[in-house]
Length: 279
Image 1 (tube, rainbow, N blue to C red):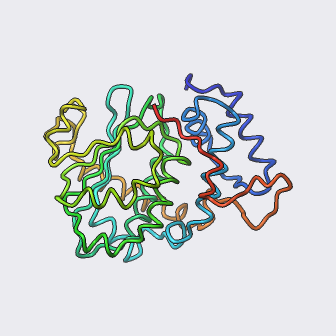
Image 2 (cartoon, rainbow, N blue to C red):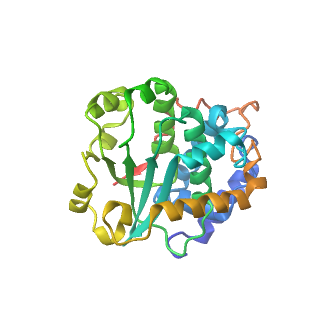
């Protein structure tokens, strides 16, 4: 991978080994993705990794008890669809909720992060220049919103925006119900202005074609790419094959019980590590 200098990977690996609060099981592909998302700035990469690990340690609701074969997680997998597609030099990330009857807020977020963690471990010859997120909220109801922890979701959204190794270029919220403005209002205040500026709302999915070439979209959205339902099933299969790995409740977490003289470990949502590159 020529996008990231191997000397920089080694430098981050050495830094992680010396940091008493940070995990030692960071794979090189993770380091490369963090470096690339931070435009290969060593200091920005360090801050982003530290925020990533500290945030995970402070959100035990979704980063513990993650057995993919547990009844709760299996149910969450059953009612959601997650898929990714390469779109030229970019990558599309899709999340769709399919059913609200069995919806549990924390279980759905937990299952999503299991899939996100599996995605982070994927080896890539070339990393995408940007990421395009598609959120399908067609089945969302006000009752479902009432059963969700909005304050936690705000924290989780900031974690995704500021601590995950992505370069966010577009966010498309599709199949919006009539009350979508109310839902957006619940989280809008927590989002940086740069994020708000790249959010697009659609009442259906066909209008996506004005922004994204349909050859990169799944067949479920009138595109020429493969089915996202089939791909989502493949993700779940891969996660189950790596079940032992995901049973580790300390995976990629900072040890916040250890004190650091320079005060580097802070609460996940302190706002000290705003490092996401938004193009």
